[in-house]
Amino acid sequence: MKRRLVIAIGVASLLVACTVQTEQTPSSIRAYNNISVVDLKTQLDAGEKPLLLDVRTEREFTGALGHLGGAVLIPVQELEARIGELKSHKAGRIMVYCRSGNRSKTAADILAKHGFRATNVVGGMKAWNTMMTADNKKK
Image (cartoon, rainbow, N blue to C red; front, side, top):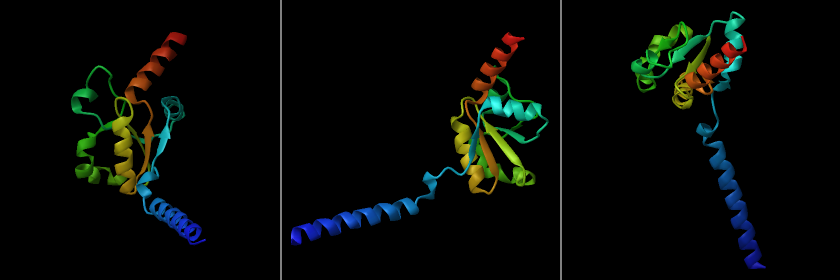
C-alpha cells in the first residue's frame, strides 16, 4: 500500500513539474507568423505594402539571388542593435526573408520580442525565385 502511494505521489509530482515547466517556457511558443512566397506575392500583387525586411548580408542582397523590390536590408546579426530603425513600422506588418527561411525565423522572433508584427517568409529568396521561374514558364 505504501509503495503504491509513493508511486502515485511521484507520478503526480512529475505531472505537476511538467505542467509548470511548459507554462514557464514561452520561448517554445512561436511569436510570429509564417507566409509562403505564393501568398506573399498574392498580397503584393493586390497592392498591400508591408515592410519587406531582408536579413541576409549585403553581399547576398546584391548577389545572384537578388532581393525583393523596395526591401530594407538589415542583416540578422545586426538586427538587435538596429531595431530602432524600424520603430516607424511598429504598427504595420513586416515580412522577413533571407536566403532559405532560417535566418528570417530568428529575425522574426527578435522582432516579435520587441513588439513588432513579424511574418517569416518560408523558403526565402530561393523559394521566391523558384516560384517566379515557374510563373514565367507558364506565360
